[in-house]
Image 1 (cartoon, rainbow, N blue to C red):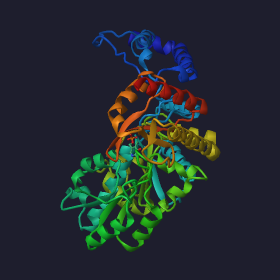
Image 2 (tube, protein in one colour):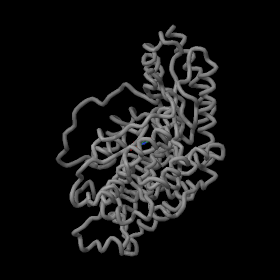
Image 3 (spheres, rainbow, N blue to C red):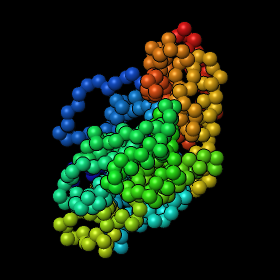
Image 4 (cartoon, helix red, strand yellow):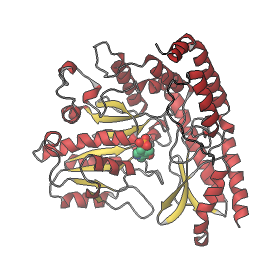
Length: 468
Ligand SMILES: *Cc1c(COP(=O)(O)O)cnc(C)c1O
């Protein structure tokens, strides 16, 4: 055995102890760690002939990379929609690595992974108050969840057109209706050969909304004269967290034939809040739903789930079955995740989510979600009350979309944002909404407190005054 490898196994205790200490140090001080850095790593590295051993490698990591790690999972990283990691999810994540199960997730064949994943899915369905007629699984992110759901939708629409797209490839024109899809849904259409240009954009309710206009949607459906279509709807848009009217869409689904997909990557968590759960009323009627876990569930990257109605199981297997592998069994008799989602071998992704859901329960997530909603409203109130800023949209859930007040200040928006982000105290991301340059702040991290709001609003006031 290689000398370094031999050494490492003898010193495993020391190695893991060091990493534990370093982890505790990082996580307890994450609030003070900058949210951005301008430093980059110098020098080019070549693969060493004999290696350095892990202790020395850790030293090199700590010299070169550790100092420029930014606190994307800290309390004031409000860019994109970025969650953090709860302690329980970190425990689950470490154990995932330690046990390193071969996760074909084949139930009843000596693989515990499927049992844990199915149990985690049940906990997720409970959290989201969704019925048990959904089959769910874990993928790397909401992009892959959208991809997985839309892949089954593709097979469904093929069947409606008398074709088996999985076997024959996609052909003919596919109708895809949507109002304000997430960029990753469009990307999925490209990947699936459905063509990102094939979407038919339906108007929004009015120019200040991102939710689909139901009357326009129905008109379009009537125009299609009974042709099947896929509807991609939003359960929380990224800019303004707008929700399509799921109750109205569910009614349309009783009248017309379509596959209904909801991208509720983070907006689905509205269900955890008594005051906001109405936003997803009716979503249980959808054929498929995307939920991100590495956002509001606050588990480490890469984690998301898809939910596809169990009645579409055959379509899902036709899409994903890993055929011609006799040792893997009949997909409909021996349940195995590799016949239901894109990957074959994968890590036990469900474990961090399982740990966090078990550790904090419904109440724990209710509190995280309510806290984020409260803080985004407080931040939104600051924007409203301050005569140098203005909201670009009302605060509907956990995101504040705002800009500098006055047309003449549009050119200063990006300068302001750069100065703000350069402080390393907070991080927000730019956007364009209704033709106006804006800034988004999204609240999804379990660590964020009112103190953070105070810190950031003070800082913003200082910076905007400098800009005058
Ligand atoms: C974040 C997000 C996605 C993409 O998620 P990834 O985890 O980055 O793949 C898709 N849809 C919505 C609505 C999102 O917010």
